[in-house]
Amino acid sequence: MWFRRDEKQSVESDTNSLGEKKNINGETVNQEDELFHDTTSVNTDKASSVDGAGHTKRTLYNRHLQLIAIGGSIGTGLFVTIGTTGLVNGGPLGLLLSYCISTLLILLLTTATGEMVSYMPVDEPFLNMAGRVIDPAFEAAASINFWIMQSLYIPFEITAVNGIIHFWRDDYSPAITFVIQIAIYAAINLYAVRVFGECEFWFSLAKLILCIGLMFFTLVTMCGGNPQHDAFGFRNWNVAGGPIGMKYTTGNLGRFQGFLASLRLSSTFTCVGSEYLSMTAGECVNPRVNMPIAFRTVLYRLVAFYIGGALSVSILIAYNDPKYVALTSDTSSAASSPYVVAMQNLGIQVLPHIVNAVVLTSAFSAGCSYTYTSSRCLYSLAIKGFVPKFFRICTKRGIPVYCVFVSCCFALLSLLQLGKSGSKALNYMVNLCTGAQVLNYGFMSIIYIGFYHAVKAQGIDRSKFPYRSWFQPYSIYFTAVIYWCIIGILGYQVFLPGMWTVDDFLFSYVMIFVSLAVFIVWKVVKRTKFIKPIDADLTTGLDEIEAHEAEFYAQLEESSQDENKSKWKGIMHWIF
Image 1 (cartoon, rainbow, N blue to C red):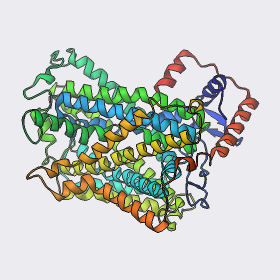
Image 2 (image 1 turned 45 degrees about the horizontal axis):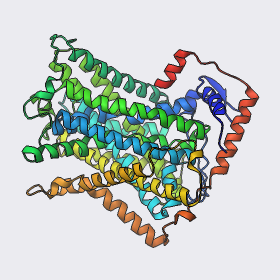
Image 3 (image 1 turned 90 degrees about the horizontal axis):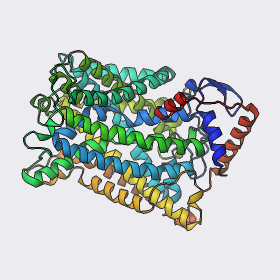
Image 4 (image 1 turned 180 degrees about the vertical axis):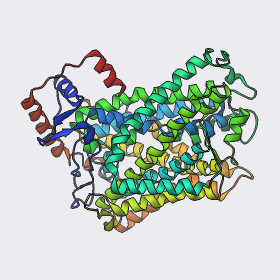
């Protein structure tokens, strides 16, 4: 059932209220606690996502969705690799162009995913939809890739933390920080998930404040508000060899490859968001109202954070700055933020330590968060029957212990830094994560294409959807073509004369071979068939959603509480 605008407004007012309230089950709960409630209790009788929606608890309100969207879209990439693999390779203009393109792609994909998720807000909605509109074997491949992607972020964040610590000191073995972090991640995810969850709000808030603060810092310093009183403006755009950096060769071809390097290794890795917000659909209260709101508001933040961040970095520091180039070289053991180096160049004393500390806590919390999401993704795969059943085993506290153990095993990949330099190991992790991430976006675009044609074939009116994406089906065709082209060129440099290395080839393309192997094996073993649009299942799970909505509105009518939001609260709601 679809709801009128006045109904949506009343719900929006209610779902943004803070403090204690009753959930749809009549229980008094605190919204701060709801976000971190363990929701791994899925009906184990459902072996396939096509058979029905999972039965996780719907406890996430609109404010929680905004928090998840912010936390998922701002990460280490925006503070560290935006310079190490973006600015250094592409130069200021190449960096900005690459981030504009990646932001456009993620915007188009986010709107398409938002339409699909808002229509069918169940557990793992876009992965679930893959088995409904494409092929169960395609769902298996996409699901395994998504789990591996989440798992690979763990060693990336661990490696980044160690490199960031080198800002203060590097007279220790990296194994010390690695072992400590892995032990803390394991302990938190086995015994104190709730404690870490309570801290996530403040970590995300710190990242948001830092991101906005750095943009204002850029504006003030470029206009002369710095210890040197140097109004440098866009001077760093005019350094020798710019404004687009050259890679592998010289001239226009070198500049084009510099831009491609920034696109492949930086912006494609940093610009994220749609998948993390989508994964909350099965646990969202009144999802067909709250999910569209979350998807609409996240669009503005994506533009502000990514394009604003790229512009700020390109203004603050030259792409060929000797100090920064040395810190980002393969022989360096540090992972420095371009903002920190720019502050040091301007003679600012205390602020670099503060910024580096916030970036450090951001990377540390992200690693622990990915350990959590990786273990839950693996648990979900076990529920669907894609991996062995023993991964369903949980402790009395509901912790999937074997899944957590596997996630911690992925963390051991960070030990690559013991045999490589910190910068080189970080680049390896970036290549692995980027390969899985872009492949995930390629899968998502194909899934929406299947969804769009299934909706059209079955005569479902898209104008009645709670959220509609832009310019379909042309925008998703454009997005799919560009993303699959990026997948193809992720490691193209290994095919250039004299540049072949097994490491670069595998770290760039291994996820393609893994996904292809999963698809073929599942296709052969289960004998699945491609699904025709007219036969796609676009209804299973809608009854549960409508029952939830009916109960939710009944509770609203009983409580009859109408919160009058002030103008200030409205501004804070838009921000958070």
